[in-house]
Image (cartoon, rainbow, N blue to C red; front, side):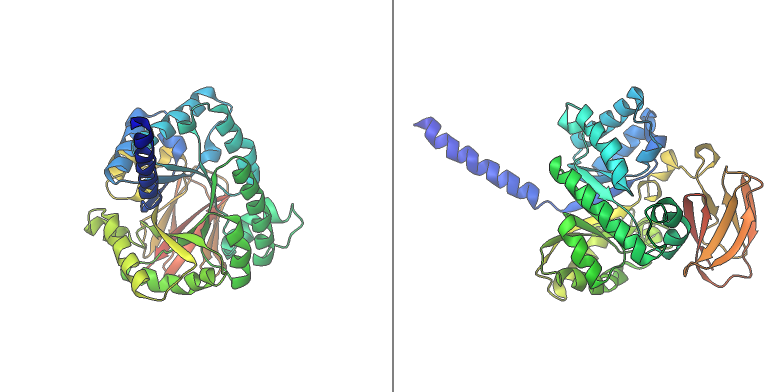
Amino acid sequence: MKNLILFPLLFCACLLNGQSLAQKEFRGLYVDSIHVILGNMEKEQFLLDYLKSNRYNSISIYDLHKLDFTSHVQIGQLASLIRRARLNGVTRVGATAENAWFMANKIIPYNQSRRNMAERFNVLNFEFEYWNKVLVKEYYGLEYLIPAGLPVSEEGAFIFYIEQLTQIRDLAISNAIETEVYLGWFSQNQINQIVPLTDRILLHNYRPNPYECYPYSVERLQLINSTQQRMSVVTLFSAEDEFLGPWLIEYNGNINWFYSIFKNAYYSGIAFPNIRLMGQQWFKYHIMPNTQSKTTIAGPENGALTLFPNPATNYVTVHSPDLGKTATMYDIQGNVVKSFIIDSQSHAMDISDLSTGIYFVRIGAEVSKFIKQ
């Protein structure tokens, strides 16, 4: 009789615990340069401490393509880091990639090789910016669209996007994990096709003032709501200097303050009955306050394309180890404004003749941006 009484009590307790977990506010972070972190115990521990102290419960890992998935040592390091992140409160671990092939041939086999479920990815994070004219013209076109027989345009990029997302969704379902997508801009027709293929949307919300973030999102939230399908949305903030970076420093990295502004505006404004606002995600780990002292990656040792100072006025220095390659500079509309050969690892470029605004520099597949003041 005691067992009969105890069972429903335990059952109810489990339901309550599950409900509290389901309703826990989403606090996500993009973790970049995983290849720099893995194998360095100081950097690994600093990341884990940062996640725990800021109560992040979701991470999306960038730069996985720079890992050697045939290396038992490196894959063991990845598995260990994921397992320890879960011990520090992280419940969702996403693998970020721009194509289905990588998910199918790297991430899923990695998961299948791990007997310990705590070492596996449980989210496939798809990032392919079909709306980005610069990427479509200078990267996606040659890398993906032309080989697929598609036009180098937003229309061609979106066709490719849906094909890839469909494959990723099928992989996620067959492996009992989630799908999430990063989205910037879309039409009603486009979002109607995207929503059935994902569990969650990380909605681009890059603004220089936290009070502008909700108004910046309203039109796109309306489009998502108009699909007439339930969809979970996470608002995506950026810690870059041209966006919320200075505010983060001023408020000592208190991400809750930024999300409270957005959330209060969201629930005080237009009702979106088909949207579940889950929480916030930040781009990205190495530029968040209190992470740069021990884990800064912008330097010659890691081979990244970096631009400084940023913002810049008369000159911007382009740092890259890719000597002999062509660096191309574009404006926000995707027009080429300058190009030059990388003849040294640090190349000073005169930008005094450029109008103020946002510009991009591309070397090979790497793209970085800066602000001209």
